[in-house]
Figure 1 (cartoon, rainbow, N blue to C red):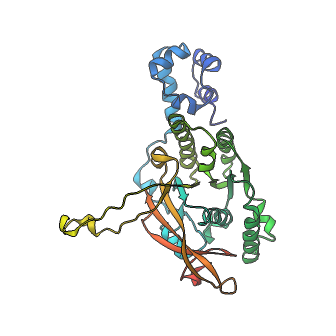
Figure 2: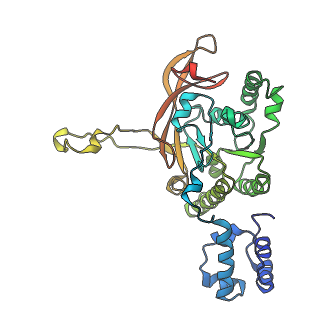
Figure 3: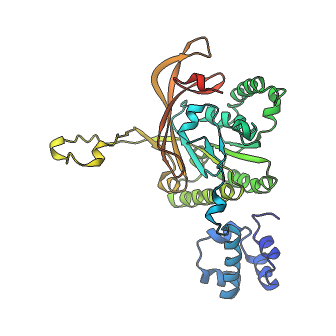
Length: 358
């Protein structure tokens, strides 16, 4: 069954033929359209030419399909599986790694800060066996940034095939397991997301990466209301996918510059016992794009930065390389922390902890 088709869902739930007929002729085609059309039950009743009781029956069927049954706490007490980033110190930023039930995880930052490198490394890591910190499955990579990532992905796959030669005989063994889609518009992204569901039912795919959600929205609509509605639609579908199939979704966002006023606080004007004055402040001249609506949809936000400081890369003949950082801005499952790293020919390596790379 296509989990996205409203008619099929109602048919397999033994819904009355009269209801099926009206839905087939006039109704929304998908479960999500029925939920998200923002029409009241009364309006739905008139539009579908059904009684209130019939519409309530449809709503009940759809709700039962979308919302999981309550479970006991004891059933949740299982070991949480996490995806290793490939570096023990960086894993600590996420707790033990990226949790399988992490939901929607956004990473954002300016160009050149390491976002795509991070994503490509996860595509390789996800294919490792679970006992080695992977998910033991195939990743899905939806790209809106062209094919500039291919050379870097080939370099990483060469490193992984050499390091894990007992698992991957050649680099193509990793590359061929990555399902890649290229999209350049909102419509293409929505089609791609809808197409994910039947593929995920096989259980072969364990990670979804979208790089980047911001560039797609930038070439979409300029109207704030329409954009917010589309973002909610995308987030709702991805949350459903993540929750139903227990798959983390990594979403790359970009930044936009903002003007902030500098505020100087005179200590004599402040209560020295105020606990908030003891918290470290964080200021930046840029902010994630897509606005407040999107911020309320994601479960975790991680900021990537390329710092001005240069450090030695021990894996590339001690050449100078840029120091970078990643920090958890907010999260429902990860501690708020920050780590420093460099981008080497073998991937992301925590700075000062090269011995922990594995």
